[in-house]
Image (cartoon, rainbow, N blue to C red; front, side):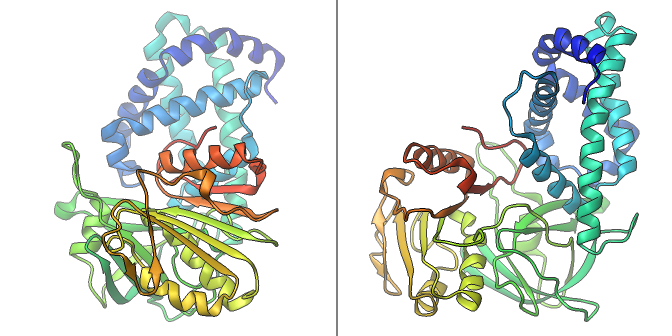
Length: 403
């Protein structure tokens, strides 16, 4: 809990910090990377280039300060869990919080100048370390649960056993531990980080990919969409390497599985709603239920550009045979494919209409796809009376889903 004296100072200075939030976080990243260029191997350089990361950090710091002073409404437990899982998948260490804190608070002083008195600096230092200590504790528990020894690396070598082109822009990789050990169990909805080396000795980059195969198998599967640059943006760093340079027999560095969101819940009907490459956790969920609880009522609702762009579509008929209570609804922007593999799709003008999503009483919902898509669907389901706590979702990238 924030001390009473610091709470008063933070409340008084919060408007100024909020007004200059992105300037502060922009200066913070510049300072930190100048002093510790090795941290560029951890942070997503694409999000740095677009400004998404600094905007997300500024919003998070302000929202947490509001939470501590009693002015915020964000449910901070789930938010902290989500951040901790992402950090654990990157191998963030407790000592790195000291680096971040030093440069973040220095950036506050540089941007706000004389307004940052010793009392103001002390109050915001308290805010930062309350947040940091909560995350450090959560991440320590995650490392222990994943079997990662204290101060050890999260990375393990995995060998590519199979590479399958699913669509023009989507490839699946079947991966087995290079050391011959077992593949750790995971929950449908969890993801792994994949670290790849960049050309020219430019370090590494890390991205998260949902596990798209059956939990409990002797191997893992990830299904990767190639990110093609648009409107002047570059192609995706990691997805391009995976598509163009990684072949069967190569090795990749992967983290243990993390992610606090389960795609199947504990009991009752399941509603899986996905768009584009967001189908990957849904496929893991269907495979898991087919193997462990085949009578469970499941509805899959998926939106895509077309049948040709719908990765892993060919697996759905087999899953329908193994899951007698599985209902599949597909929406395509271009339904020129008609019927493929016995599956029909409706024509969708843009995104799915949430009012037309089949909804069983008491269903647990899992969403995965672009943020605007998830926001639309979640808002529609909330209006239809689905409690917020029954709607799980995963956001890849900075920021959180609101509303």
